[in-house]
Length: 289
Length: 265
Image (cartoon, rainbow over all chains, first blue to last red):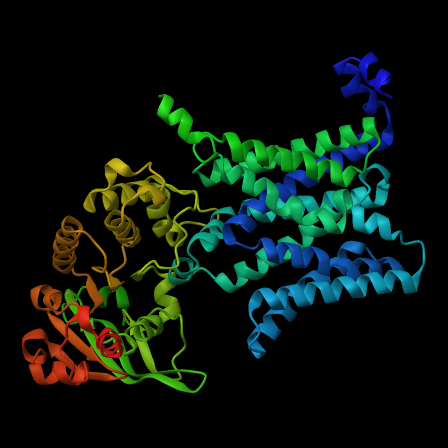
């Protein structure tokens, strides 16, 4: 295996996978999904919704299973359960004295468990491993189409409401005081979160999709003080991680989802250490100057 | 009657609150609070912590729905007044994330969002409004700095600039002088007087009675309801202040909380 790696040129390393239909599909879907999740991750990290992202991405599990079993688009089932879980979290929080993070943990594990039970009970052609870990290399033509549609809807809405959502994350009170419907923005952001979790689980699976929804935003946050630049950096780093992750997965035969998220984490670590202004080693450069 | 025409009249009521009651899950926070403020006036809202000052503000801004009573801003219902950019609110800013990646310019531009179309793309007039607002609070030189790099007083001025950029006729300021440096305090006091000259109506919540004496035309004393309301010289009697502060001398540094702590020690 290592001899094989040495004998190929970097160009072959890049081009060889492109001769396969499934790899072209996987690379395109991963790059797109990476971009979508990367864009949304800026809002998640700034709004402080990392735990919410974790919750929603796990809670969509039973929805995916039910949709598969009924022959419906899995995005529909995921969407219903994603939004449903958030509504349930809000309801329990309001009607009981339990703190929010406890309620979130409670609801999403409950939903997730329901999903696992459903998979074992329904036992059709649903592959638990595929849902849990994703499989961009084995993505079907129908799933590609669905992912494309959802991705473009999410990107379109995020671009359209970019400024409003930014203001909502920064100062919801002010947004409200100038007549912006913040309740609508809240549910819009949750809806986009559910949809992004659905496309994200295609590539990295339910367990790791939360990484797609927070890591690129966190990385970009360390690199800039401007919101617009943050979104661009997040999208670029996320898409790049996805593509590189798929390549590494192809050449070294490792799990694709894990490979993508590891690349993302590595990029985050580099930013964490060497970011010009907010990295660990920023002070030394300042002293040297 | 056309409210825009009416707003030019000197006696036009900018803020009208009529017997406003607010309760949170059955606990009364404010009852029968009434207030009428004309164009071109500054009014101080004075009361202890927990007396209902912020509740009154929240009701005026539509953040809480009064269980009873009526509120009109420039003759409009609150939500309509907000959509028309009639009212600007300068909060105390405890809930703001100052690590948010926005510049001072970006923050002040947020005051213009309500006047922009759905894409929120600034026009020349929006940029001019932001520029002038920054000029008035003396932050023009710092406009490209991240909001988090400003000092406490500069942050207050930035949020005041955002309200100025909004070009609203009614300004609600929640404790604008708390935690600001002396230059900022002077600058803000001057600005408020200019705003009055320009016909704005300003409602300031404060517990510093000196500010009220210095430049408030009117004062509202509040303790769960409006205890007294009128021209500052008439309302600011020791009897009224005793009622407002429950017999405790109105010194913000030694409120009832801290004196109790002292006794316990």
